[in-house]
Length: 303
Length: 247
Image (tube, rainbow over all chains, first blue to last red; front, top):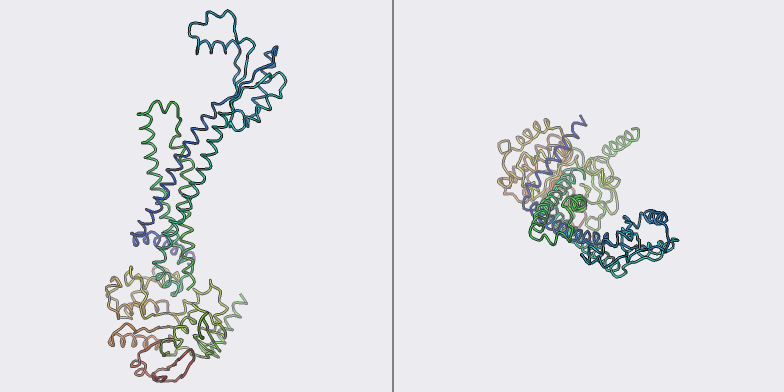
């Protein structure tokens, strides 16, 4: 009997949560709009900044250091050195061995275009090299120091300016992103919890009546909390759908209209953006709806 | 288990000796100003009908709030149904309040719900099974003369009818005590009398009724116990009393 009553209370609570949303439709609409606006801005900014970061990271991956060998180093030793560099997984994505013959062919193809006949010998003879591509250009210094300490290595060519520029850009984007996302998140939390608070304060009389009749805190709080969570869920789902559609449209537009741009810049797919944006938005929306209503109802429970 | 039984017996003993409501040297002070209630000792027996009268600031509202455990006494002890209210924990208050029915001057109905839902709400709170709610609500609505208006929104009702809904809501859980705070304050004389007659009928069925009022005519006509308060103290307490001017 008692269990049956509990179940009926749970059903009643869930029903009340939904009914309250429709009963206070203007407040519900205002809350959903506030949450949606905040999370839309947050999502939009996240999508833009993530793409920036991705573009810089892609550029970083194309940056490599070139390792040259002491004259007379055997091919076997060169392979050993390549394996040693490959083992530095934290710093190195991949390595590429380019023999002096391949290097000359590449140079001739790129710059001489038919005038290579004037050369009877390979001017790059003895300049076999390994190109090491890095995980993060900020780690270039450490990697170069290590490679230079290997016996058989003559010198390492590196680009300090490019590495510093990319590394700096990456750091800047990271800091700016964290800063702006933190501000947007704080503003969102403030606005959403305020909207939830106002909606509940308007109904403080209803809470008072419930308490006078003998309602437990759970009975009073549960429909409000459910209502807050539902509003948060819808408020998070709306901007997610909008961003999903908008992002795809923008991506298609840019790909079709600016072919040059897409060959240089590598944009993230909507799935990659949503990998983090989806759970974060839902947690923020539902979480604030939950916390906002719990905290606000608590203020009115001491009757 | 044994502890609960001991507690129940203790409460019954207090009720037997001191009545269903017992205030022992109770004072209540707010952070500013003089005490709202000053060293009151009062006993109300089970099944009594009591008027509490007095001007604004006499301490009537504070007394009601103390009985509802909305406030706790600064000093002294408040016992309701043998229970020392100071010992109640926050989570125990709802269960305690289910022994009390409350009616206010401004009705305090849920205006976005109809008459049936307002009354059924009180039953849902105490987790009454739905089939019992369906049986109890029409019965109590018939008692207060609103059986035909169960579908009406509360805003569509007259003041008298709204107070009847409030009364039905207060009574549907069969409380031992009914607290009515200025129940006729917003009503015309005809409706006021009808509400008072209902309260009297409820009292005759065994419920202890406490009415806080300013209505001299009603108090004088009904010939019940009258407790008069002024500036936080009881200035008179008479069986079959009348509304006396304190001046």
